[in-house]
Length: 429
Image (cartoon, rainbow, N blue to C red; front, side):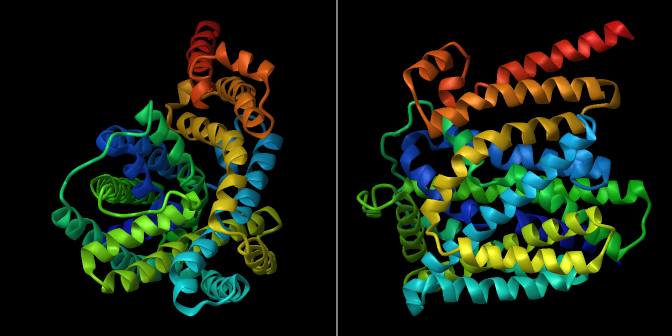
């Protein structure tokens, strides 16, 4: 296959596997609430929704293994538990969320069907694609992603040119932190370690190039997909900010319906009545490709874990789709609320594993991995408890941890532990 063609198909597929429900719905409302500070919110959002995920793809390019390889330097048992948790979370939250978003925004307003019918048909189609494993990368990269990108650029481009370019006052005290935390909700760091493994296996199925050739292909694809995500996110955030005074999102509604109303308003303002149709297709395609990536990645992992059995792959895919149908009955907002404490727990660990895996070998020893991951885990606990069961004593504790009031109390301890553990290891050597 032509190398340039192969590069762009892989890049487009990677972009599409990342770009799901949250990626489309979260940025416009974030920009709307950010108002005149939309640029700083966008910078924060890019850190957790673009930079960290693309570093995750670079780590996959370096390892060219499975998700298990990300955590094995901590310990084999840790890595096994971490992998199982990640895949359970992926199947339990972001995958059903794609069906909920598709139903609420694209299907129900037109056909008024039940969530059960929508999610059943949706995951039946997902299962068909997942079971045709070898064709996933090519189909998504050649056909679905270009359609998604064209529609997005139409909405953003026409929207920016047709708006009055006026913004409201920001509702955020710390815009960059607000962007960072909202970026959690895209699940893209978790997506990087899950869909990166899908890309690795898909590439191995398609051609038998050398390790270095595959490394180059994966890394370049990551950069191109990251650039695409950056442009689309910045565009959606800025359009949300500039349309703030023109669209009534009805602030009495839940935040998920505000997101839907804002995106629908922008689409109609940019494309007229045709905007509703474009939005429905866009939501459906973006969500569908992400669900395929999540379930294929999960099935791949358990297939490898249990003797490389194709029967395990098929059974895992079916179970994941059935679970998607069940959880997909919840509305988008409910799934986001369930996700928050889970994200506060697993996201920091995922981020440090991604960063540690791209460090040079002399700085990423098992000792460094263990020290940083343990400290990250300990300092992420207050964030989880603070959301589940807030108390005065916990608030006092959090007040003594730098950045903890922003749910980022793990950052400085993890960084400090990284520096100390590297220095100690070098001194011992």
